[in-house]
Image (tube, rainbow, N blue to C red; front, side, top):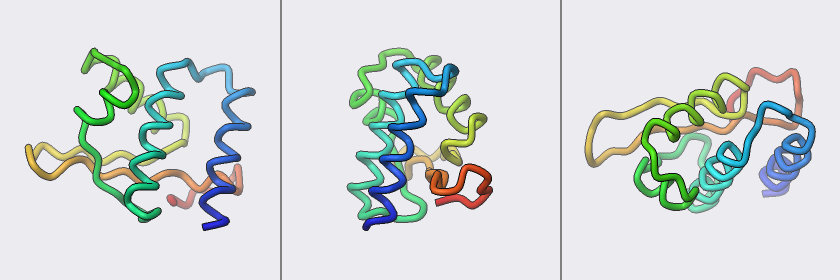
Length: 105
């Protein structure tokens, strides 16, 4: 669990210096972190777009998809969408312990 807390701390510190991130990125990522904690820190976990949007206080589906795409492009997560209404999309958070890492958490 120490590694997971270290990863969360690293993200919080990185947000302050990453000029690409806006409040919507932060709120979606924090909602994802909450889901990750709820999954007991599973390497890959399922998320519901509707629940994440509610938790992040985002009302636009377009904004949600833009933010998820940008977070993936910026190296914060890997997102595998699911088009199944009951399954949910798969997310893996990037291991931020090593800024040069290409390993997914």
